[in-house]
Amino acid sequence: MRLRNQILSGTAVFVLLSGGADAAYASIQSSSLGKSISVGAQQYVQSNSIKNKTTVANIVNTTNLRKGPGLDYDIVAKAKAGDSLPIVGTKGDWYLVSLSGSSNAYVANWVVETDVVDSSKISSNAGQNSSSTAEKNSVQDKKSVVSIVDTTNLRKGPGLNYEIVAKAKVGEAYSIIGSKGDWYQVSLPSGGTAYVANWVVKTGTASQSDNKVYIYHTHNRESWKNVSSNTKGVSIDDPKVNITLVGKQLAQSLQKKGIPSIIEESDFANKMTEQKLGYSQAYSISRKAVDQAIQSNSSLSYFFDIHRDSDVPRSKTTALINGKSYARIMFVIGDANPNHKENKKFAEALIELLNKKYPGLSRGILLKSSHQGNGEYNQSISNGSLLLEVGGVNNTLQESLLTAEAFANVFAEYYKSNK
Image 1 (cartoon, one colour):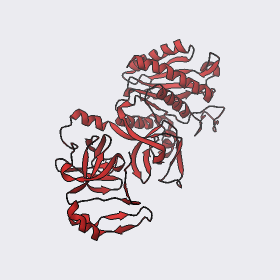
Image 2 (cartoon, one colour):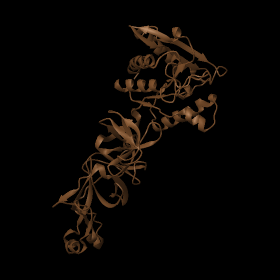
Image 3 (cartoon, rainbow, N blue to C red):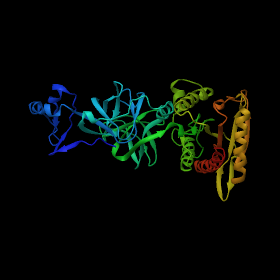
């Protein structure tokens, strides 16, 4: 909820009283002229009548109090709706408020309303030690987010004149990491940041522990012969039309089924080029992203690395099911992972469901040792980690997207039966 400024006779008044003579020299901001007019003398005359008054932040929704003026600072306490916290300072879009026990904390100005009250009537439990350890942990598991309510542009800076860096769709959510004026700075799935206008979003909190599925693409530029911009040699790849579109389709399908999923958008191929790494080191690059995702979302249980197979004949990588052409799925398991048998059991359970719902879609399991490739494929991180080969270079994007939807249907059935 946004800060509501008092409007008195066409003048927006923001009074921050800190007691004593300093309060007498507050200024009034003219809403029509945008100028500060000193009213020190007038306020000094009135100071005796307001010396027992304090400007407070009234909490309107349960919110976090932080160590510093920003969402990246540690949470020190939790304030509940109805709490009133004396304001003792301000920095940017944050108020410094006084807590019980002679300590201070910061609260975002967009989640409070300000008021001037009798200091003797202030009541707040924020900052007291009465909250349990469990409650503190639950607070730390929350992150402030903006939910997109209309398709909009994400920009390089806080204004409409800045370059567009991405487009956000309805229903998407982005973590807030700061604000400037009427714009939120948000974290992008690719690891960068951008700004979004506050009038096209809703703010709230999301539990980091909600996310269950992490989808990524170690070989993120793998493409198909009919669309690839590079068809020379054995590399069939493209910087835009590639396997990441299949992963996004899978993530969207799972979200619609109520399974919170994260899609990794890092360009691993570009990182390898920048770091002058060979093709065989791709999994060490993607592993860093996987580890970072786990640190930020401790409850992730399933990890799908989406690929497409090499130059395999279409007859082996394509299935016609109910009149529709699908790219067949092959499950790759690395036996260099000490617990690879558990990953194999997971794959077998999914294959059983695939055979029932989409006969012919599965190509089965390919067990690979370290002599045949990476051998581990980041699968030691979880028994629910799999590498999926969706079709091959001779399939089409549309066939692969249909397969992503089919796999989402099957996984959703598995997930709900194993919750």
